[in-house]
Structure formats: structure tokens, C-alpha cells
Image (cartoon, rainbow, N blue to C red; front, side):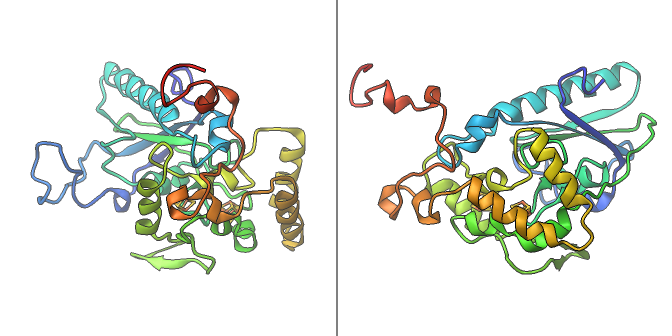
Length: 289
Ligand code: SF4
Ligand code: SF4
């Protein structure tokens, strides 16, 4: 039903309470200083997600936008919650832009959608990191999915492309670290967020998602490369594939991603489609060209 209601990827897991925030988010009209008890009916988590349009996604950071797929995911999750409620069960959507009360990446991993990459977010076999997820918590009884492994963790150990492409150095090139009892790659959130708000573009960056070799349009070549990588116990193919990625997907120098007043040239990872290059057909100093 989640596919039918608009979601591209779907996974189901029992909700681990460790992934629920200790306090609720701001602006809810409830006391944010009171700890949030995990409601009993948040027994299961259904993770849904849709991709961003590929061309604007590749044109990050200046032209990319998450909002379109956040909107699609939000609609799919709300439809799904309403569907479950109509069956007589509790359901609560946790959606992008303001009302998540839980962390989505570990829940999506538990639900078998993918693995966590060095950039801290989800890498899926189908869409790489080109996915915007939401969660529906519910008590409708369901069979659950299992976490999957398709070689991302090993690949990330040698790859580090996202760390090299991150304009602010927010992504570590070191090994995983223990964070509140779990081993993960931890990014420097402050550095990342400061770039989001100091640069032009749609309040964001997403270069780490865009430059990740897993985030490619599906093709027989890409699917074949992923298969080799996932089934190579020696890891020897990883260096070759990272090298190929750098040859076939050359990127601007990292400094170029900044706005001119910060020493850059407002570069995009890939040239945006013409319909996004508004400065080519609109004279912003007055009137259409
Ligand atoms: S979104 Fe941009 S600034 Fe933030 S970690 Fe990714 S590449 Fe770095
Ligand atoms: S760019 Fe490389 S290191 Fe970063 S998440 Fe993707 S595969 Fe892992």
C-alpha cells in the first residue's frame, strides 16, 4: 500500500526506542523541557522514501532542492497513516520539515532500506543516497524486514569521496567512532549547517549525497559495478572503482562551491538543466531576456 500511496522505497521494523528523541521538537505547543515518553502504540516503524529529481540533485549545491521529494514523501506517509487509521489502528507520520520525533537513518537501516555511509546518511541499493525518507509509527501487526548489507561499510572505508567533496570538512576521513553506545561515522553538524546558511542555493548543500558513487541513475554498468563491489571480499576492486568515479565524474575544486564573497564561484557539482538556469533567460536587473 505504501508503494500504491506514492512511496518509492518501503521498509518495516520494530521501533527501537533508542532512536526516539528524548525531547519533542520545538513549536508543538507542548513543554519541550518535559521528556518525551515513547507512546506504546509506536510499536512498529514503516519507513517510506522518494528520490529527488536526478538533474537538480546532481546540480548541488547551488541548484539542488530536497523540497520536492520531501513533499512527495510527506504525502505518501500521511496517506499511509490515514489508511492504517481507517483499518482501526493508531498511526503517526514523522515527516520532513519539522515534525520528526525520531532519528530516521538508524530506523531505515533497521527496516532494511540500506546502510549508513561515511557521510552519516542512508545509502540504498536502488537510489544510493538520493532518497528523502519519512516514518509512520503504528501498532498494526506486521512482518518486519531485516537489515541488509551490500558492501557499503567496506567501500566507505577506502572511498572518502564525500569527505573530499565536502566544502567544510564536516565529514571525517577517520574510522567509525562510538556515539552514545553505537558505532558510526559522525559528521560535524555545525560545519555542515553553517555552509547551508552561508551559501546560495536552496538552503542546503547535499554534495555528499550527490558525489557518492552509489547515487547514480540506474544503468546496467552501475548495477554491475555495485555487484562486483558487494561481492569482493578482498576490497581490491574498491580502489579501482573510486578511481573510475573520479575520472568519469570529475568535480570542481572544493573552494569553487563557495559564493564569490567567500572566494568561490558558486559552482555546481554538475551543470544544471537549462530550465533551472533562470539567469540565462531572466534578466534579474529588470525584465525577461
Ligand atoms: S551537506 Fe555539504 S556541508 Fe554538509 S556534510 Fe554534506 S557535503 Fe558537507
Ligand atoms: S562517497 Fe564514498 S565514502 Fe562517502 S558515503 Fe559514498 S561510498 Fe561512502
